[in-house]
Image 1 (tube, rainbow over the protein chains, first blue to last red):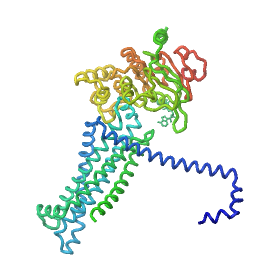
Image 2 (cartoon, rainbow over the protein chains, first blue to last red; image 1 turned 90 degrees about the vertical axis):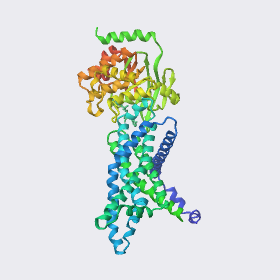
Image 3 (cartoon, protein in one colour; image 1 turned 135 degrees about the vertical axis):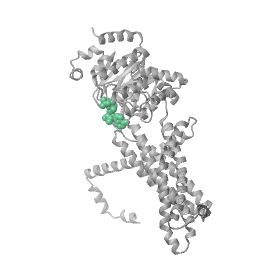
Image 4 (cartoon, chains in turn cyan, orange; image 1 turned 180 degrees about the horizontal axis):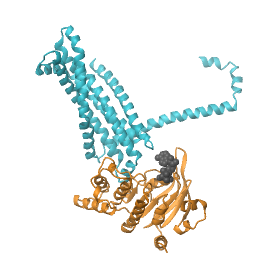
Length: 286
Length: 260
Ligand SMILES: Nc1ncnc2c1ncn2[C@@H]1O[C@H](COP(=O)(O)OP(=O)(O)OP(=O)(O)O)[C@@H](O)[C@H]1O
Ligand SMILES: [Mg+2]
């Protein structure tokens, strides 16, 4: 509508004539800069996409680096266990101590185990464990691959007829994808255990009763989506860490940058994936 | 008559016998994000010779040998290795070529997460040669003996000094008996004594394994000791080519400043 009005208006045309050469070149430079910026963004997106394709292709190639994969599972799984034990314990304890007084007021202390179990398994366990893992594993992978890139170790690998995507990236992404769900389950279990401890600070519940009440409250729709999403958390952490490390620039400061941006981006993406997962679960339940 | 002269004489007779270059670089150009680094470089490496590449920092020497190893793709020109352009090689052919190639990286590039022994095993296991455990052990001991460091076998790279790391990387490079060696500044950052030892090792490798080598260096002592022939790069172009005598007696100010 506005355009129709503009065209017959002859005042516009002289205005157009007054455009100087300078302003054209100015506009030109700006457009080029803008185009370059979008170009950079697009090449970034293309880069990420290409990287994901390479990882997928490497995953399903016949030459799978099994030994390196096992080593990474150990690195990611076993070495993170102490941290996850503490995290799970604190989650269970805090949940219990904070919600117990309210439940006592309502005379519903018997609901405590079930409530703690459900909130741990559905949300707290997966998200907090994944965030902790983004910090520890994401930064670890980012820094390791980043320093390997900067000190030419990745080049050296390539000269030794070893595909670095298959050897370094695929193994780490898969190990993270498999290990993080296990770590989350472990954190859930340990959290429930700690919750029983917490419930016994002021109350008195037998272990078997507590466990029975806790697991009695969990149904399939609590557990299944929660477990599925942890695989995605793991994949996101592995992918972001390896991508940032593998694409580190030149010079030592880019190692720190790679580690740092790996943590920031993977934490953020964990939350985004969680939000999407909640939406999908919500739709499934209805 | 000093050693260098006899070496270049040797080279000249050798060169006239075998005219086929092992590596033939013609009109190679390479730019990063529009900034040209290599502009037009043509170099031949002949069988069994030590070719020293001189040039100021930042003229693209490392970029050039990374192109030769296929780690970077050159934009223009051809790099023929054993008669085939590496740009047109399929990934299997590249792997086969790299199994004949040794690359000593400027930073050593030892794998931080592995012990010295595992570092040395890595190329052996991956070279496609099926060696038994015993044979591998022998080979590892042999190269460690060659670089004079048999006692560090179970150490981590972080526990080694700079010179030791360089020597272990050299050991890791020669363990697969390469036909072509690429040395990126093998003596930079080392004391004169260790530098001299490394230069001797480079000559030993040439004698023992009959390798053809490209040696990039700023270190004129190393260049004089190892070179059969020298080329000089400047601003992405070939500046001068000749034998040690040509360079030493040159009155060109740039070459002169390198040599005196
Ligand atoms: N992967 C890369 N991406 C972008 N620029 C690069 C890359 N590799 C090298 N360069 C640039 O190319 C130029 C030449 O670098 P190169 O490492 O080849 O120098 P050099 O001759 O080996 O110097 P030195 O003797 O200091 O090692 C430098 O300006 C460098 O910034
Ligand atoms: Mg260099």
